[in-house]
Length: 473
Ligand SMILES: *[C@@H]1O[C@H](CO)[C@@H](O)[C@H](O)[C@H]1NC(C)=O
Image (cartoon, rainbow, N blue to C red; front, side, top):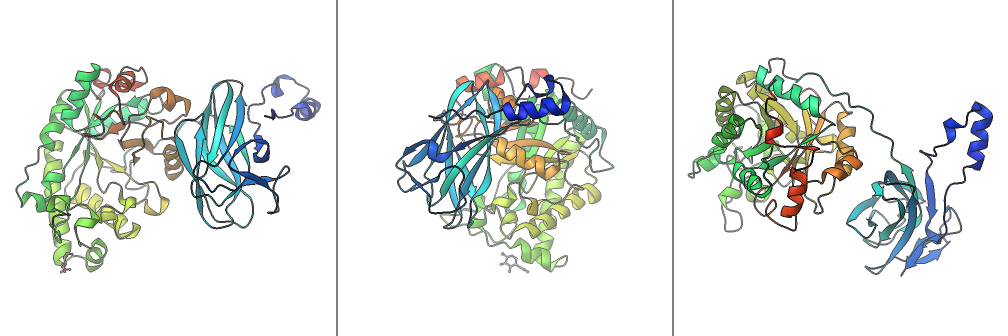
């Protein structure tokens, strides 16, 4: 393996000449290091030179078997975070590849179709001191790999989070919560759990209770109530609030009408696109007066009743309706971004202006810019991530920094695997909170072992219920 340390001699001489001080140039902190693929270890792959524009003496191709790969050995003077980029040519169309650091979990990198070699951002890698390996492994194959470049990640500048909530009439409970969240953002993470019963289960396993509990207004959806459901989420939220906790609320909004209610798609799956032919685009286009539009308003008003119970009980709510819209698997996202954003605006207007709900902090839950309803109705950004390995989810965090221009705090509103605090800090993935989904995730060793939960819940970086007492100030 060739040791490709950067040659700093020239840089040093140049800097000395221009500044005359050695101190300025001693740390080669931000110098990118490039490793040529043709110098790396090839497994089932070959070196070629037919495609012009490569650097060095060639590039690597022939990723056709699932085990085919190129292994780069890279070194770091200390444990350190780097931005990784891959110089590649996807000359046969859009492709995906797998990147594996030190034989650990694979991350996926997308190469847009191109006729020449391009440098593609490939996320961040945390290298340990000494030698590390980075594998690029066959995924879709049919791409040419020229080189990789590692650049030490710049430290995050301090965030510039908006001082106030969007709603000018926000009540003192919501303002107090928002002020508290701002005070901890970037310094600590709030532990969180979906459902009160699972939060209490965590207390039994770890001796610590989550700071935040998330509940679901699903069973207050009129099309479920008609079929006999009885919601308990409001009581659970008040219980957690009364013990000094923070509450987040989502709503699996069962479609008001058009439920298939078949063997495969029961009425209680009615928030899924696959379970209803309810058409939000047509309904919004038809507007007030249309029977289905009236049903939408009826449903929002029913949910307002529940949110008012929370407001009366003094509970500020991290309110996350229309979650995962961009996924398209829920009916509110099934017709693309425009109806989803319009429905968000309708919800915002109906709940804050019409119903005077001033205890809500509005949490948006998609990443893509074309889905974003806008800064004026969104207080906090979030995303749901289901990836095993208890990783920091830094790719999604970085995407949301971009979306909110670092003016909105960012939450991991639903995760399958709770993130390990040491990795969060190393990757500067400063999520405001994480909340693990309930049954079959929090209690499933493939996602979260009890040992890992103990590490997380007893870590100084992670805030638990006992540590946030008095957040109202
Ligand atoms: C309301 O939605 C249902 C379910 O998609 C549909 O069958 C019906 O035609 C719609 N009604 C109106 C008035 O648009």
